[in-house]
Amino acid sequence: MKLTIKKQEEVKAKSNTAEDLRDLFEVGLKDIYWAEKVLTKNLPKMVENASSPELVTALKNHLVETEQHVSRLEKVFETTGIKLGQKKCEAMEGLLKESNDIMQKTQMGNVRDAGIIASEQKVKHYEIATYGTLHAFAKTLGENKAAELLAMTLSEEKKTDAALTGIALSAINSKAAAASIRH
Image (cartoon, rainbow, N blue to C red; front, side, top):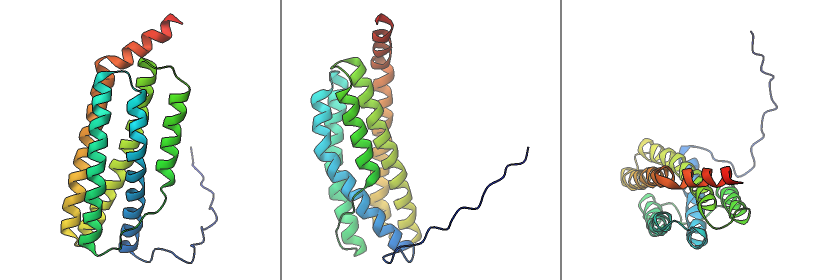
């Protein structure tokens, strides 16, 4: 079977385009900085809507960690000489909207907890992808201190993702599944 791919129209760059890898690095930093700051405002809502003590603790820990990530990003801006700034992160905005929708469409309990975990893991995966990319950019650009700071955050994001999986698999998902069987 032959796969045919139609040539798409070339996307025209805007006038304020990224000229090189450093420009992409700067845009990425500003994007994740905005995302982390917005996440610090949304995590308390998730905490209030979670019922599992393990999940509440994990979300509270994630809030503290996210505040540390904001501070660490500020150090990355400082060490690289890039002016501190934010760029609205459309991806994070969409993920948090989805999280709010899930909370609005579920009752307090295991099903909502499973939804919160799913939403949080989508956030984690976005952050893992972003920090992994920024770490690679920093290494390529010779920004060793920034690379070190970004690697620390990347490692923490991966650990939080694994912890959320553990919480989901320990009981929440099976209890949420049992709730659907009863209905």
